[in-house]
Length: 344
Image 1 (cartoon, helix red, strand yellow):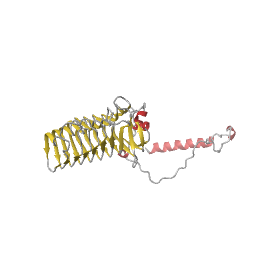
Image 2: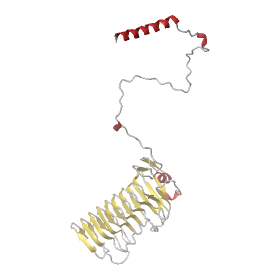
Image 3: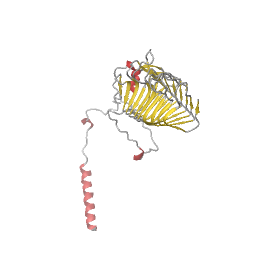
Image 4: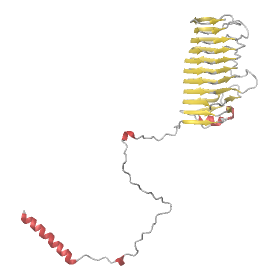
């Protein structure tokens, strides 16, 4: 083994000796055609970046990184939107949208077309029909009077179909006609919709019906006035968990009833039902389950005939002030007196 190592070492020494004796080939400088340039040839448009020394670099864990999916063509960017014209309002309607309306008179009939797939303008049903929208708020700017109108006597002002989580706040709405009680359509119409909230609104005639609720669930209407309607203030059909709280049903010239409901459940809490006139079918008719609690019901007048104040089935009355003057009786049908009522 030692002999092999000595032999290998001897061969390496011999090779190095031969290389030194022969010498390395020289490369003359004349072979270079150009001198080396140290000029800065960076293009003028290039931005020089100064690197700074970083002591600590934090590398996030995979679970801490939010991966943003690229939206498809039908996605809607949510957020607050301010509008001041009917066209802007039509174009802004979308899911997950909070729309603030600036002060003004919004004639919805002036919008003849829109690319927004969630709305239809000036059809035979409504001046503004909103379809298939979830989580939409229409709210008046604080301190502003916002009025939504249409001159079309045969169209609802606002209609919502197959919508969920809808809120209206601080909105005036009605038909812009000079002759009273000429409309054949209502003001606000909800059909096949859920989770509806209306607050601090004013719905007026000559809409035929102030609020229509057809096949709706979980509806809260508060601090809202319905007035000057020609047929009735409220119509409720096949709708449940409906609550009117601190609402005024006043000065309606209702050719049928002020409040009418079928196959529905509703509560009217601390509401004011006064000054309604020209009633043909009594004041309140309800079939289903209804509760009137803490309401003031007086100064209402029939056009002719002798009708009761309340009629229908499964209506409960509690802590209400009820005036019978001008009516045949306080109630008829399956009416439940829960006590605390003041009958005058």
